[in-house]
Image (tube, rainbow, N blue to C red; front, side, top):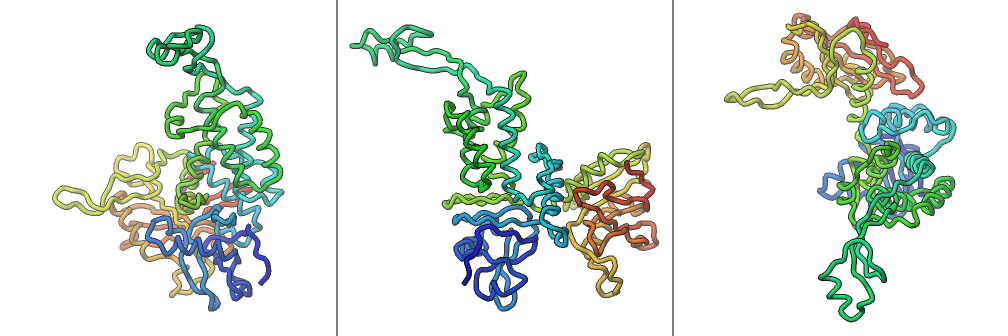
Length: 438
């Protein structure tokens, strides 16, 4: 069996395997057996962390299938598996990474991402190295502007009196050595919580980065932090962080530091092996990005709200049950009756508008249509426009020319694509609703 690389790229819903049959299959990406066994053990446990993968059989071979997550998976043996969004499967890896990074900026914890970096487009930089390089760049900028010092309270047994004499400890420690003074004093040092945390994050990423450029810069930055100790209590240090006036340039490195120390992402696989994952649920990422885009670009209407939850499906004894939470709600100015309001929902699914076979229903889900019917009756009183937004692909490049009509046609459902390509200017066409976009 040929040597297996410890760094591989797979697309969302792709397959991972290690056996000879896996090596012969064009559908399976091969990883080391130790990495496979570790990931399989996660799948077989009852922990919620196993939800990002499932066991399958492909070409008579047992494999692991990545679910609807994108990012990087780490295993204890040092294997790194990069997972890219499925909708960019026909694009090159660089374009797919750029699209994912662009969408991640809509998440609060990744607002400091710089996606206009030319290196991202020109070089096939793995996602992990992108995050690490941006963290290092923010720390490098911080050092150039100067690490801030603060007064740190210290206790010591010194040869001369300074600060405040601690009488109890003076008697205890210097009953015989009367030439010494046990004192409490303040010293102006760079040893403050925020600097300790950044130093800790630098040490952590040093163990994960494989980029020669990142490792070189890391050595330089660690030298600048040599006199600052690591954080002994991360939780307390984060609680003690105080950015004084003139410390705004600390915001970006501190945000990256929190992400790195917390494990980068909502789904973290940390245990005895100290492996972790940088994984993002693509439904949430897509929903967040579409919401941010529409809030910025819709003009001449009213308010665009995300995750509205003011209505429920049923009441029982005056108690509401089953909250209805559409992803987006557009309310028109001055429309008291809500006749012109619009409910929109995002779906991270692939559909085929070009396939008009009746039995296939374009790949659309009946459950999604029932969900939208519930939104229409509760939020729009059974009359108005609903929109389902799917990612744009080669098989779904234009909005459906006709609306899907419920009952007497008073409630209409439109199906439109949203372009996630990083270089795209106009991402969505809502002309069917007479909505203007910047």
